[in-house]
Length: 409
Ligand code: SF4
Image (cartoon, rainbow, N blue to C red; front, side, top):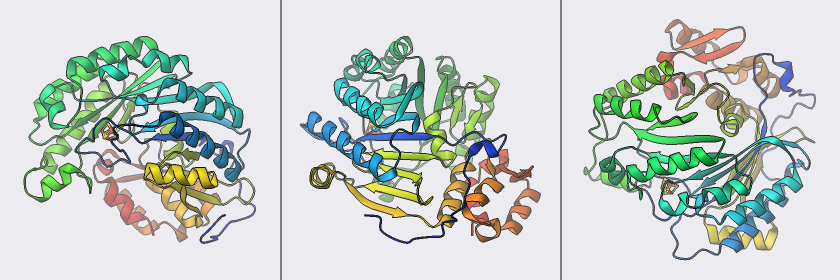
């Protein structure tokens, strides 16, 4: 059922991570997408759907079926697994027992050790916070809480269903139950002032999270905010002010031992999200659920494969019942596509990218990298290149997309 372009696939490619001292292994993960939410947030372009009634068991069984198919397609049966991530949507609205059944299936398909990071995304509403212990009992060992703001007026603007007090309560509860807890926040809101964000970030850093995802509000096509902005009814924060808030964020987090290991992600040493590192380091992951994406090196033909599932939950489920998966796309990538992915994702990381590692997989750098442009941007202080390792400088991070666009062929 493999479709699409065959691409260049060097038969003698070596991908052992231990050949690259200083660069961490890329890892293997499984992503599960639960596509339902109580309400659509006006800034969100994720594949999330609001339904009066959800056949939880039916969707859980379909995810299990698709997981089994993905293990077959990938040839990864028995492969040691570094992480599982339940994302969405709002996976904490799933019955915990269903998450447990999915995890049992994963354990039967792959090699899962005690060290495997198993993350669940949750919102801090009472309904979800009430059920955190049940998820812990099913084997979830890391919680990612979508708090977004510690101010009630900002939460209302973002269309969130919880208050700041509920968020603090849910976080304290999560920290009591789970060994590892991360929290998400959004800043650079329209009219947000630098000193307000400074004050709020200081409070956030006092919450004792070992991992923080701190995102600037952006306008995404298809969202309610996007339509409002188009009609002139929403004005985003001025870019210079947003940049000041980004720089302040880097400085404050660093001074509290939580420097950015990725542009928007901060952690105390050792608490980085292993799952997201798999994406950023160009590792292997399988996706299951409506709209889930997977990317992996097929162990037999050494081809980088991308899978994408249908987004519409009912159509996806129907396809799973007919053919064992809901994939709308299953295609081998050209190795230069892999090089672009590796550069785009890897430069987000503080550790950067090892060019010779990408070359081993994707062929000579001259085919996918504009080396003159790299040299120029190094001279401009936006990139740094030492010992085969290319990284963005602090200034480069502020114009990351432009830099990446310029150096890729
Ligand atoms: S709860 Fe999360 S996934 Fe659902 S609509 Fe809001 S931001 Fe999107």
